[in-house]
Amino acid sequence: MRLSIIVPVYNMAADGKLEYCLESLINQTIEDYEIIAVNDASTDNSLEILKAYEAKYPDKFKVVTYTVNKRQGGAKNEGLKVAKGEWIGFIDSDDWISSDYYEKLINKALETGADVVGCDYSLVHEHTYEVGQVVKNNKVEQCGVFDVDKRKNYLRESGSMVTKVYRGSMIRENKLTFPEGIFYEDNCAGPIWTMYVNRFEYIEEPMYYYYQHDTSTVHEITKSKCLDRMAASETMVNELKKRGFFEEYKDVIEDNFTRMFLVNTLFSYMLMRKGKKYSFVKNMKKKMIEYFPDFRSNPSYGRFMDEEQKKYVDLLMKNSFVFYVKYSLLWKYRRLRKSISH
Image (tube, rainbow, N blue to C red; front, side):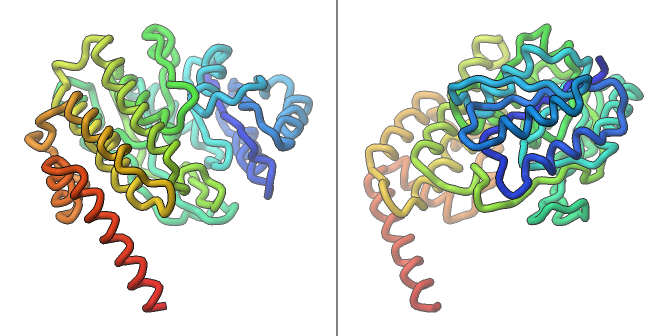
């Protein structure tokens, strides 16, 4: 089997989202591939749609289903258990891909000997194959055989995992999986998987269509999702320690952890209108210090922060309660100004 495409599915039946995704997979130009659709305990009629595709394309389409929701990481793991492909790809069930997506990625891998090949993606707001806003997912200078420095360069901005194809033997031989039961599973898995990549290649073409819609799981800020992002970050660090990569890549791991665990989570959490608690922020600071007490001394610190965020992180580290009060008041003031101006 040349390729296995793993599709986690949870409640995607509405508005034709699931069918649009699946049609793009059924119509791939590459030969000898399987689609593994994993029904992650959906409560709508997603499973019925999947079963209909399985009945229509029995040689190409396989449905895996279970009754307890495992989030996308758990669904991907279930797909990996049955995947037979020499190459493995993942796609979110509300997105879609160009018909030659996998053919181009795998041909690039075969030409170069790469373990992973990626491309750019297009942000779209409707079901279309017209290219919208293009997001550069990687850089040309990241391509080639990895040494320590090149792997670090890739780790700093590895991009999305769904816009790539992976060598199946790399995944199986190194027992690579995703964390289960949480969002942001790629934040954890991506850096771990990167440690086993010998060569990466990249096609500068937006062949993946990332659908922007109101029900997307990434848009709503909740305490639960903030906790998930922190858990994904902690699991990443602990797994890299266990696998023996931590010391050699500590500076980049620290940079990734600071960005995901602290900066992204902190400023997302503080935007919540209801349910914020000082104890959450205090605990976040405590754990950050436990993992990386000198994170602000990292040469890469602040790459994705503006001056205001840097100022408030400094305040957090000096006095977390003062930070909490001041930042809360700042956003109350800004919301008030915005409401008055409208």
